[in-house]
Image 1: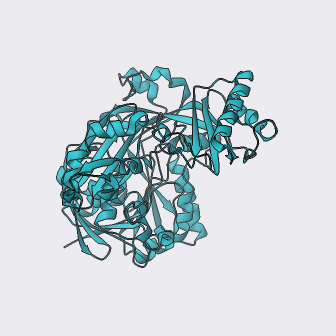
Image 2: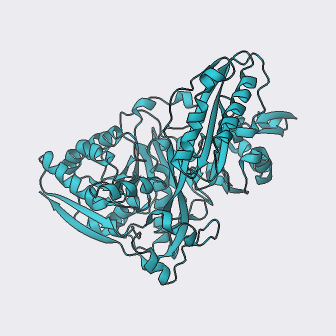
Image 3: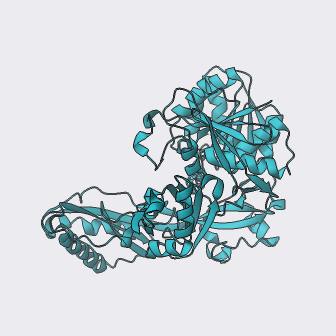
Length: 454
Length: 110
C-alpha cells in the first residue's frame, strides 16, 4: 500500500534549520514542507521588499537549502515552502543562485503567486468587496492609508500544479500552512479537490505537525523534565496512507519524543471550534480525532473528517499602528515592592511633565505577575529579595515612545535607593496591527511559474 | 470532598488567534476527563481568568483524545502584534488554567 512521508521542516522564521537538514539526511521523506510565516511576518517582509526589491522573503530558507538541497536532489525529496513571503520571485532567484554556488544542475524551481492583493484593493472594493473587519465590523477606510500589505491565505492548487510540472522546489507566498501538506498529497494520491473526507483527515494530521518541535516534545507540559534531548529535538514526519490517515513519527536518532500525549497537546494548539477548522482547501472537523501508539515514537492519527471549503478566503492585512516604548528597572530589599511603586509614580509624574501621550499602558512585575497580571495578589512579603518593574506604553509616534526610556533613566540617581538595571535602552518597537477580513474566492487566482535553474 | 488543581487531572497548551487565546486541556485518563467535563465549565473558566479575558469563553470537546478546548476572546490586549503584555501570544495562559482549583469527591481523584 502506497504511503507518502511528509516532513515538517520549519515552524516559523527563526526556527532551527538543522533538524530539517537531518530530516532530509535520515528521515526518508518524500517531501520537506517548510512553514516560515506567522501572522505578523508578512508586515515585516513587505516593508523589507519596499526598501529593496531583492528582499521580502525569509532568508533562513537559504540556510536551510544550503544544507538540505544537495541531499534532497540526490534522494528525490521535493521541497515546498512559503518562505517566499512578500517576494517569492526574489526568493526563487536567490535559490537558483544558491544552486549554482553549490554546483547543482537540473534543478526545477516553481514560484506560486496570486496571494498578494495589495495592488488590487481599490479595484476589488469597486467591485463590491467591503473588506470589513471581521471582529469589529469597521470599514477598511478606517486604516486604508496605513496598510502595509494585503495577502490572501491561499490554498494548495498552485502547489499541485507545480509538482505536476516537475518542480523540485516550490516557493510560495502566503499559502496556508496546511496547503504545504495537502498539495503533495493531492499530487501523490490523486485525490479530488472536493474529497472533503480525505482532505479533512489530512488537515488534522498537518495541523498536528506544522509547528515542528511542538509535536515531538517541545513545550510539552506533562512531565516536561522527562523529555529527552530537547537540544537536538527532531522535527515530526507524517507517513500518510491513501485515506488521509497517518502515522506521526520523527527523524531517527534525534531528541524528543512522539507519543499520544505530545501529539494530543499539539492537536489542541491554536484551534477555535475543532468541528470547523477553516482552511482555503477544506473545512476540517477534528471533533472525533483519535490517537493510538503503534510503536516507539510512532502515533497513528485517525477519525477526522471534512466538509466543503469556505466560499471566502481570509485576508492577512496589516497596517501601521504606532509604537511601543518600554523600560524596566529592579528594586531590591528592603521594601522592594513599596520602592517599586514609588519608582513607578516617579516615572509617571516625569512623563506627565514631558507631555507624554499614550494610547494604552501596562505595568508588570517580572517574576511576580507578568504572566497573569491582576490575577496575582500584590506581594506582601517584606523580605521579598527583589522585584523587576516593566512599564510599556503604546504611542502614536516613535518620538513619544522614546520618552518612556528617557524619563525613566533619572531613577538611577533621583529615586529611592536600591535600584539597578535601568541602563539598557530597549529599542522602540514599531507596531503592525492585523485587519482580519475576507474576500470571495472567485476573485483570487493563483499562478505557477517554472524557473529552470542552471 | 477535597480540593485539587486541574494540573492533577490534565496537561495543556495555549496560543493565539488574533486577540483570541485558546487553551487546550488534555486529561490524563477517563475518570479525569469526566471530572473536567463536569467541573471545568466555560462559566467557571471565565470567572477564573477574570480581567484577563474581556470577551467570552466557549468550550469545545474532543472526546477521543480526552481534550477540552477553551476559546477566550478579547484575551490578549489587542492580539499578538499589538499587545503590551510580556506573554503577548498567550503561551502561558494554559498554566493559569492548570492552577484552577476544583472540589472533588475523595475517591474520584485517586
